Image (cartoon, rainbow, N blue to C red; front, top):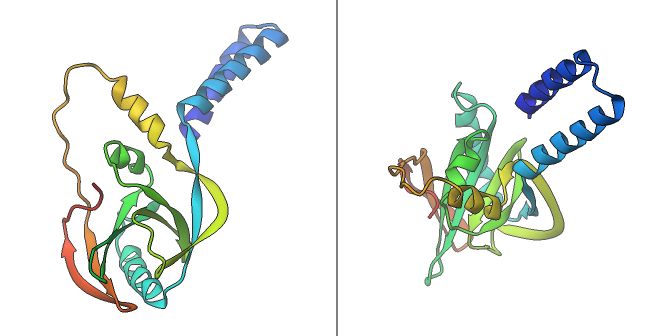
Length: 195
């Protein structure tokens, strides 16, 4: 966004220096603004609330670890919920820089369940909805750093026909099992987060 603003400011100064007519300038600025909005298309995401105290504890523990790492600034938490055929649910939590989230989501197929905020950290939830962990609200909100899946697919399909080499990026992931209203730590490492 700041990059767009600085480019816009430069263009504005150049146009004013060239003594462009006022109406032409307004038209150009309108077209430039519309183009910027369309290029960064975002969609409303369901707002969620946390229902389970154990989930709050888990996220608070990871939040404390985040505060100790200088690289984890301007980040979003990603929570993947995978319901199984048994009574347990697998939870995977990771931290991704907001500037990288669109790139990370570009080829992921998991459903976006919604998001909530915990200690000022935005938590994006993917995978399956879990009634025991979260409550779905009637509210939706647009997060500027999360593009629509349709926009991501359009950008991928508009690339050259020559296939790019695969890029593997799996952030550090904390894995837990949610069963009988308890969350149990399983492992931490470079695990697959989203499908």
